[in-house]
Length: 497
Image (tube, rainbow, N blue to C red):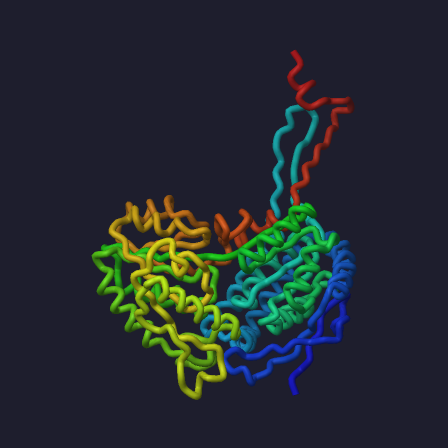
């Protein structure tokens, strides 16, 4: 019998107020029931906020280096349990073990980076314009932070958000994707084992339209961080704007990899296979457009078709598996719809474009890696995020045309160029309208100590990761100390004639 899991609220593992649960199943084998998880509602969110407010009082007064020590212990525990967590994540989300190991490693890197920031929450001391007066700023925590996280990086993205928020002294309520609730359950257990005070972390399982919505609308949650679709992010933005909440949005992408005629084609082929079909294309940074210079277009496309067709589908725990399943039936249905759209638009289906056959794969949500050629700019296949293993190939005649194609979408997360020309490489870094640009590497592969995010419909200007995220989760407070013993008026007394 499958295990029934609980929320973590007010320092205890508790059943949802609704008394109802949803199933969490292995997307590679839907007969494999991982567990039943709470289908919570607003009442559970209210209880979590009450507890998180109490936790904030305690945690915000804990010295930042001490908070960092807790996160360092979290990193140590993640190191000890890396293999077990990766295996659980593969079972729950579907991607191959090499990727889930990387997911855990990103959590480890984020924990250790956050731990060091406990001694680096810098303010500034500046000269005052008045005599016998001190002027300075420092960073202070904000309050209760609500985190809404997606399915594709079940550990990495929650740690990107949670660890900086905790390091800055905030308390946290997390609502993980209902598609991957088990991984965050494991993470919360580790946080508690590492010594995080119980009321500082609340875990509320449930659906976006109930728990997520309640978290966003709750007046006791002044900070929201969301990763998901641009459409949902826009709705969250409307609510947070009206309620004067601080909001970080990390949303969609339609990322292009440009291959110029002087590129190392062996390297570029490896890059596009990983960028397009790693995580079964279920990344906001996935390479979903391949922009090929006309001089190398035909021979590169032929090699790509053969290589994509040779990728092995299967359970992510298998040693020989290259590509796992999509997360659920709705995702596979969406991919099938876009394959039909591409064909209707006149694009050439080069390889893939179908559900694989065979007894071994019929219990999972698998789809063949798919390549379309002859894709025209401004078509739906070229413009819209699919979030699956579908790659659109676009032929261009120049660097300038490649830049135009890259920039002419509503998103602006990641971009990539393969070239041996240093001038083109540096022009690409300047001219590609994205938050991230890679040279001679695919559109994925963010490192935990650098800011992550995009422009246009990809985000709202804030960044995950690196040093910038600590500014999002903290407020600047300015302090003046006047020890002159008399009234001194800024802008007035300093410049008296």
